[in-house]
Image (cartoon, rainbow, N blue to C red; front, side, top):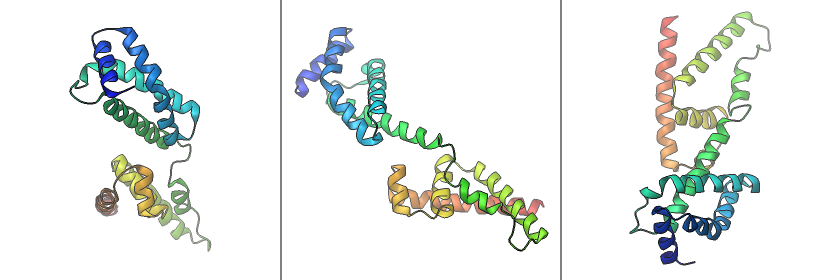
Amino acid sequence: MGDNDLRALAIACRNGDPRGFEVLVKTESRTLIAMAYRYTGDWETARDLTQDTWIRIHERIHRWDSTKSFRAWLHAVHRNGCLDHLRRAWVRYEAAPGDEVLGRLHLVSHDGDPEEDMERREFHDRLLAALGELSESQRQVFVRVDLEQDDQKEVAKALGIKYATLRTTLHFARKRLATLLRCMEEEL
């Protein structure tokens, strides 16, 4: 189906024609499911994301600029929904990235030095508190790059951000953490 046909259906849908919406769903769903599958690697999730997209389209059809391509708008809404899903999925991990590294900071020293053990536990607690003060994006970038030692370009790709954005976010995360840890140290 061509862009002009899709535009006509979308306009009809915006004007309250349920048949227009039904035809849109039937003609474009396969493409959206395939697109979502490329993001998730799971067909059921891809179908769910596509259904969510159609709900958003139905609710927001009045926002679409009818002088522009409906298909481009539809794909942008769908892509954003898929990316949001991936971000939420990352947050839902049972063990958040960095937990293993943070856990090792808390481990008892090998030589059994109680003073070193206490310092290690105190630093661990201060670092966790300071990480909690960072924005979500700063925390993700810092944990994955500095604590997990992941490749910066791979982290940028995984988070769906530009490499330059990752570098800037990492810089400000490090700067903020240093300030927070310094302030905590002075309070002791």
